[in-house]
Image 1 (cartoon, rainbow, N blue to C red):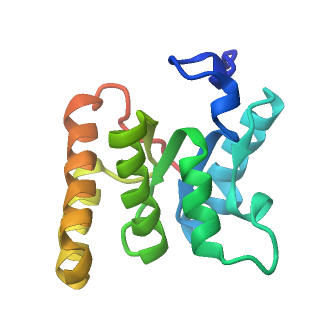
Image 2: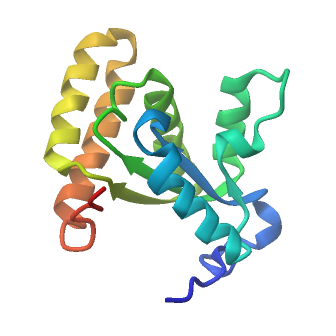
Image 3: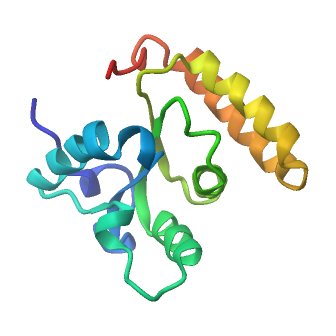
Length: 161
């Protein structure tokens, strides 16, 4: 299967975006297997990808670099995994991704890796209870995950690890 160059999608020109794709994933779950394979496949197709261990500069503030990279990406691929929602880093990324989807038209592609979408939604509910100050933002993310479960279930049944 050939991957069409991402910058040709949508109404934005390729000069509007620093990256074609931002990868959001839980490193402990998928970095050394699925996400590395996905990253390498995209790079082989000459798609410009932001992956934290490849793009972050030493000495720069990590959080602001990640959030800027999300804003500078045309597409966000979110790899939901068993422990994705338990990471405050992942949740902060997802909040920013939802914001960019709503304000800038960023395309979001969910991948449910070795996890049922309904389990991800249940974990969001737990996260909302643990992070009271971010409840509204995390609730929006849970709603987005629920939308992906309902609207894309036939496409995104999950990738078995």
